[in-house]
Image (cartoon, rainbow, N blue to C red):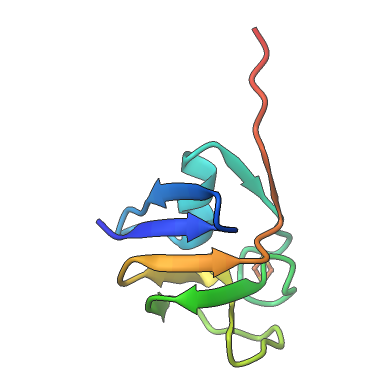
Length: 92
Ligand code: FES
């Protein structure tokens, strides 16, 4: 399973059937999103290294080095930057 390094500090394992956004959520992160369908660009981040595959049609504008995690899966070990997220806080 490919690993995904996020903002140089967090490393998570991806599941081939989940999008990168879903992978982040299952790892306990709360990434920024809105449409979850490639339209709004809220989840946009920078792909530093690795390969991703799109499983949906990207309508939001992205630069050449940017991806939309809500409609991408990691094909290889991947490094992302400028991911906007917070950690989920579980209360007892
Ligand atoms: S959440 Fe809207 S483009 Fe990803």
